[in-house]
Length: 436
Image (cartoon, rainbow, N blue to C red; front, top):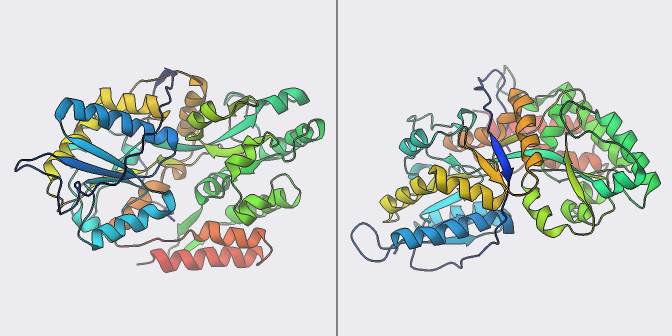
């Protein structure tokens, strides 16, 4: 869990230009091999075959970019990079265990930094300065001013509709930011869709604090912020948003089973019986491949009254000292972030780039990527800080292993506690995690 410190400066947004289109690659999962990455092997500068390990977690489409590029890197350099696929829920433990065993991988695409291993990260400052990453994703270690984590791609929350259902019902919806709608309007229109079709629900949202923060921001909240006395608290607008969120579940607009019982929201939307899905840009490539029974469309997020997404790094490339292949690892990262290679990665995986001004061609649904870029540009500064704050907290030795915003909201939705207790618990637990 990462939250914004009130009053911290946020640098300006940058327009990330996109052209038409996204080739979607298939994920080639590489198995863990014992001869690469850790302190016990991998060749290195002193000779022998060089094998690097890239530990990451991603779905089929996201991982395909790494698989494709690492194959080409081997052809060009003779250095093999094994792409190790780890379930997202296990990635933190995997990296901690490897560090404690003094056998870290060469590099990883981690959701954040971790106090368990930040002291053994390689300096990536030179690469950061060379490649031109957008400044809102710049996070230096405050202890030494060095950049030790590079954002992989830009991720953002967004709204998808089951276009077939809306068209069948004859209900119009906005397609550009010039056609704004509120959550009240969305609920009213989605109710019309449900009544006119065989749809069961008006909307579903991922059971994630990342998506919930975007929802809070749309209500004018700044989320959970640090107070003058050093404690952390959810503001009044955030409490009002949580109350509205619960009402959506009580009224049957959203299914209780996703947030209340951890059902799969993506599968729920793919069933074809949900009018809308609040998820994010990472779904586009998957939907292109897997949704065949109905048409879907990306649309602007509702606002109440603030236009806001929640965006940041999808993950962070970190490289470890003590592997024996440090120089080769840095060479690979520099190669990966070169314009040609990084552009190819984004095109294969259907991702938004983090390189400032990089033009990426998307083979399908180019309008959707443009829409995400536009919403990012119009979002308030608070929308940019979740992932960067997470990296900063890791540098500061703060280990955040739970999401009180999400966990306490689930209790509230399940009628286990009041709104007042929910707000109090979110602040108290966050304070315990982050207070100096």
